[in-house]
Length: 300
Image (cartoon, rainbow, N blue to C red; front, side, top):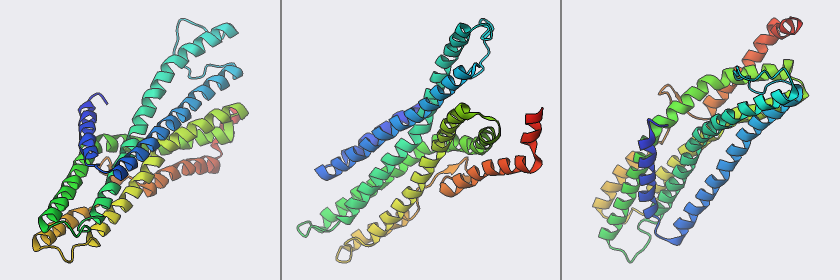
């Protein structure tokens, strides 16, 4: 995040330029609605990640063990209950900071994806209104079309700035989530007691929301881009000038290329990839069951 901080400042600048295009009250209200959705998403992530941290902390305390087993050479938690609480609280402080940093990195792709969908939909509405006012001349209609083309270029620039950061984060998560989810499910099914299962369930929810919401948003974004191309084709262009039609063809050609993200430039980010990665967890559980590894470990 430190290395790519300039990208966040650039994205903020681009969002400011895109928001300036929202002139009428309808578009401004639409932006406020999407911002409200983002404001709801953030505390949901915060709650899910904090629930994992606190549930792991209290489950371990009531079980008489350290919650995160961080190395502490100064306090022997086995000596007394007081030492256990002190050592556990000292572990909770840095872990809470780590978890906070993690959910901030995990939530920003979704927030930027939602805002991207907002501006794509606003652009589609502007395109649908092209040449709908009979009082406007051909030059004015052509100027409106040019503004829409500039808006589309601004959206593509926004995507190009945010793409390297998002693709790297999702790529690492795709590599780890299948294995981590598989190991966690093994612990859930074969080794954990009732209280530990509550903490594990919170951890599984955290693993799922790392990638699933953004993958779902990417699929919706592809549908939005397809609707954008349809809106261009079905706009009121039949009675327009030749210059207008030439510009519209150029716009339609560029709009037909959907906005998509790839994890590490290897596989596309979407629900299909997310489900495929999640299947690895069930493959790990099935493998352990077939070889009776869990029973052997319990006997040992």
